[in-house]
Length: 130
Image (cartoon, rainbow, N blue to C red; front, side, top):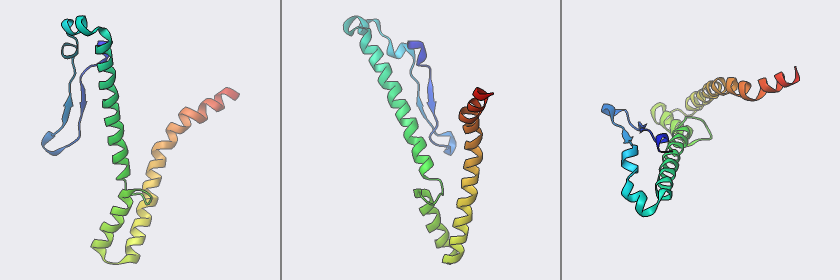
């Protein structure tokens, strides 16, 4: 089980190569004295909690980044609308730019999602009937 925890590296910034490293090695977790005192359960629980919080961090970061997309129903869409309104100072032009940006971004997202949806859901259904 300890070989599952290989170095996990999460990049959270691109300025001058800044990133946060979560390097967990078997030597840092496994200690014969700790295993003798507390048993293997403590080590396995620590590994499980470490993986849990690593995945929670990654999921939370992904949800936050998705929320910043300039779509109308997300926070990024509201910020994008206000930024365009600030620079153009024309509400009708801002509405047009915002509308076309939303349409283009939805088309890009659909272009990314539909092939995967076809491969995972639709194609197996078609193949099961053939």
